[in-house]
Image (cartoon, rainbow, N blue to C red; front, top):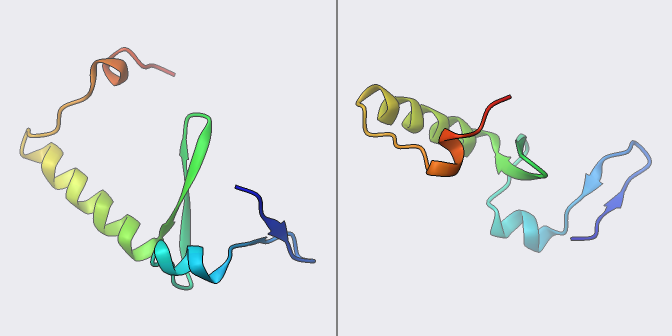
Length: 71
C-alpha cells in the first residue's frame, strides 16, 4: 500500500480505506512481526478483552509456529 504523509508526518488514509476498516478518530497500530495492522481503538480493546477471557477459560491454543517463538 502506498500512502502519503501530511506536513505533521501523519499517514493519510483514503476515506474508502477508513470506511472499509471502520476506523473512527482513535486507532491502534499493532505490530505483527514484519508488518503492522491498523485497528479502530475500540474494536482493538474489545478484541483484546475477548482474547484475555478466552485465555482464562483455557480455550486459547497457539499455533505450532507461535509455540516455538521466543524473544
